[in-house]
Length: 314
Image 1 (cartoon, helix red, strand yellow):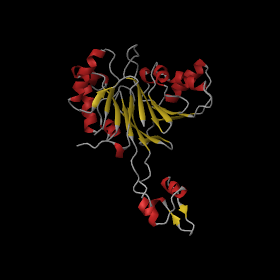
Image 2 (spheres, rainbow, N blue to C red):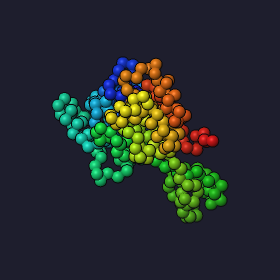
Image 3 (cartoon, rainbow, N blue to C red):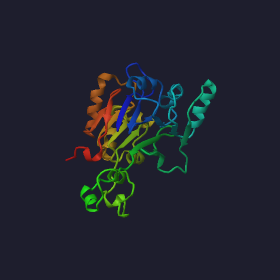
Image 4 (cartoon, rainbow, N blue to C red):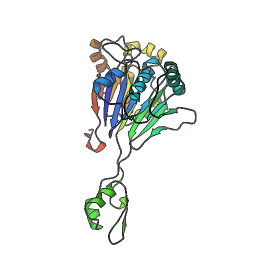
């Protein structure tokens, strides 16, 4: 799993700081979180690829999180045989996308599926053969969602000694069992995966939480995540403004991710009035609460190791 951070800005794109958006790449498929104005620029610069883009998850319908959608959709329509696209987000997402398409008159050449939050929505928004996407409402000035992308559980470790004891010949049968399929031996004995595999293994988990006050739902989305992108709109000196506008300070973001036991946290969605020269100070402020938090960097790539390959905490 790899996450590419397209920008760390909030409110408006600036020449030195593009808006917050993250592309997650898992097993050859791409998943995008938020698409504000100008998202096509880092998409092109990163060579992340749109043909295999399966899903875009939009947190809320503020311009800095959704105005880039029409351009991305039009760009994909110029490609040969792009994959179907699922758009996940708050109520009104379908209306917004279709109204812009109708007004501009552009043609979409691939299937689009909309999934909007409603009162009956459960904790899982979307699932395919690679990932599961969970969502929870946040606490912002408009309805806003936080997201958690989870790689599906993997089969347990293959027990070579047990397979040999059962007389399973090495080769295709081993591959079939590791893939979760039963096999029949020459003596007509059926061997099931459970007979030679250990317990299923957890996949990698990533959280994306922006535009919210600290909430229990934000902690739930971030809980034990391997990597979390979380907003740090203001420094602590602007705490009153953060409360009024329903954003988080970097200190609050550090405290939340620490309490949620996030392995690595990245601050995004910074106020445009924060100068680049101030970023090191903001990072230090957040690290007083959580040593494992850092300021995001445009076009930075964050590799997420499988849980069993990650260094163990003390």
